[in-house]
Image (cartoon, rainbow, N blue to C red; front, top):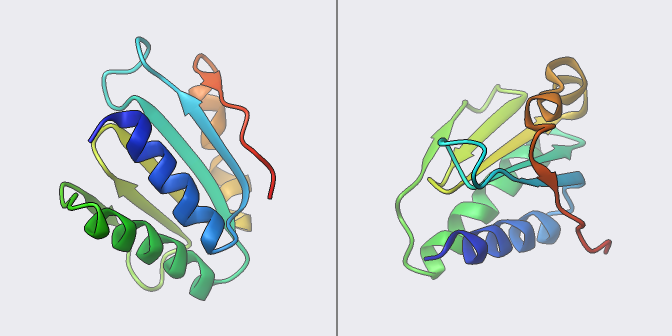
Length: 115
């Protein structure tokens, strides 16, 4: 699956579970770790895990199984590493504390459609 297709799949899965303040950065040619980095916020632990599960289910539906999830049921930050796309799902407090978006400032922030 191309990285652009994987990004679309991720963004749709996040939208279905009402992730908030979703941002995506194109890091092609800048980072060797991934083509795209995505950050989104959840208002509760339940929503945080629902977003991660939605991403995983969408991957399975497309036959994509090459991913890893970091974090546990008590985490305020889950990382879903899909290879070319890395997704960070935060509680609102954790996102403000870590402010990972500053690490991606060299990348191109993508314009996402508002729902």
